Length: 374
Figure 1 (cartoon, rainbow, N blue to C red):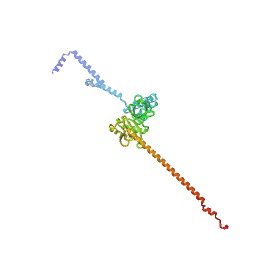
Figure 2 (cartoon, rainbow, N blue to C red; figure 1 turned 45 degrees about the vertical axis):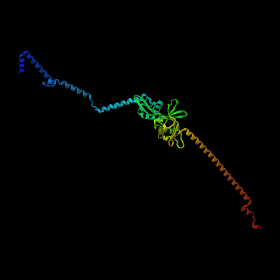
Figure 3 (cartoon, rainbow, N blue to C red; figure 1 turned 135 degrees about the vertical axis):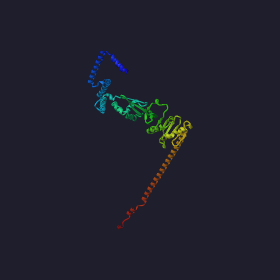
């Protein structure tokens, strides 16, 4: 009721000019709404509610149009295949240009881990040439490492690694030196593999080392393998190993120790018998000889020397007796031959005498006259 009274009061308050003005404005608004309806096809009543929605629809349409422009009629799988073909073609072109260029054969080869082996010898053992392509070395790294291990006597293990763009490194692990063989030209290093490494000058020898006095390479390889099985405490006490074969034991070794004692042991029984020395060495005096050829007994150089003198005397007496026997045998043979010759001569003489005294039967028949002549 209050609102209606207020509107009625407003109508009463308006002047005649204001009423005309309001009517003009209403007509003008009606014309504008009709023009808008003709252009957009939207009803005048809904025009006010759609004014805020029209800009949003236009934006959505614009976005859809952009998406339509970016999409292609070619399937995604074909696009990926085309991209792959293009990539392969470009790669082939790049590789072809690279192989034609001189950079394809320029390599930087280094060697690491060497102590006794010479880096240049390792490079030669690898078989890598200046004319080899980088790709050839890259795809044959394991084969090259195996070739180094087989060719260079010092190398126990080799590994080839690649670093971009053209660097290759050969990392080696060497065989340790087990002993030194004494020769007329000096000391030759014996490696853990049983092979010889090279001549070493006396100034480069270590303070303590094992000296081998043997030339049989097969026995040296077997000895090195057996030494590798021994405890380091035993090996560190070995000074010199001599090969002293006998008729009974062709592989007998005489081992001189740093503690002053020596051991006789067959090479084939080295790992089984030599550890017993550690159990009995505390009971031995310096300079003892431990004989393990057959059983296990100890002796001294003096006892060995006295036995040697007795053996020499026995051998000499045996030799003298043998000579006397040979002389007596020769005398008996001579006497027998003399007797045989004498008997043969006597028999021959007797036969001659008998032939002269008694004529033969044929002779008698020849001397008798015939009866017809009388």
